[in-house]
Image (cartoon, rainbow, N blue to C red; front, side, top):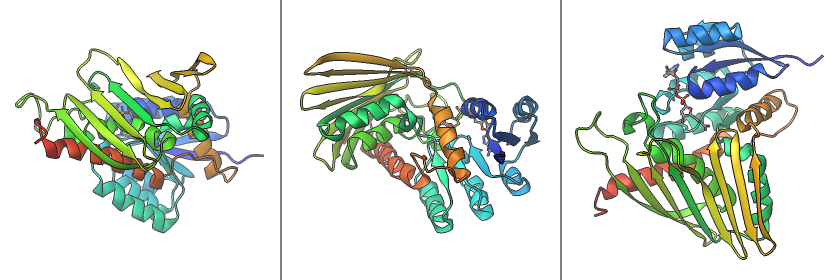
Length: 326
Ligand SMILES: NC(=O)c1ccc[n+]([C@@H]2O[C@H](COP(=O)([O-])OP(=O)(O)OC[C@H]3O[C@@H](n4cnc5c(N)ncnc54)[C@H](O)[C@@H]3O)[C@@H](O)[C@H]2O)c1
């Protein structure tokens, strides 16, 4: 009989809900504990999953006998949780971004590496069937140009618009596109950002810029441009376009679990829509790695750190150039 995997989840907000419902759908997993510092939220999740409730995530990691833990907390809440997991030798899946800054993520990466700990990061696009299709297509015809867009509303969670808490739009959202860019085009050798700052006095200090544009150069010689905006009533476009010799690829995310790929090449235009749940695929791959059944994790902590470095550099480049780019 297959041994059941005992897991916990710290954070019980939006993305934790997606992971918890995926985990509840697997017949070899028990969600035994959940944590959130908002009592009503953790009580609801604990009752839905028949799990123990904690209001302190470190306490959960230190008290429970788990096989793995999910960290689904806002960017500013990372550090102590991962340190506790490393101390216990407990494999963890952490949602992107790794932290609101670079120093925390770099420090945790060192601890994870030193402990040889199994980890995964929530760059879920890597688990999309459509992304695999694109990887195959570009394997013998490398992209020359990448254009990415994250044109959206400001997420309603209280921490998001404060750059000191979320890290900013590049670090918190557009990071998915930087991760795809690394996967499909290769490492970034150079970048530069200009942005439109938020109006002074409008909410907390250090507000996330309203819009930004990042120019990229890749090791391969390819170039790119990634734009972000957070001023719309709803998501308008989230995706990337790749141009290579004889083809254009468009990959768009309408919502998690609703993606579309359009490829135009010498043979015409083909579109494909996917309703695959990449969060469930990412969770399954991590669970199988935890159980020692396979090595299907597509983004470890160390790999995610390289993407985080690009997003962080994009955010800092905008901040250092100010509103005029001077
Ligand atoms: N992969 C994706 O596409 C995707 C989508 C949405 C969010 N996310 C990421 O997931 C993370 C959480 O986002 P969200 O939308 O779920 O936010 P959220 O605000 O809905 O949920 C976060 C929860 O964490 C709790 N929390 C905060 N600090 C905590 C701490 N120290 N210990 C325990 N609980 C704590 C909050 O009370 C809240 O319930 C963010 O990093 C975000 O970027 C990823």
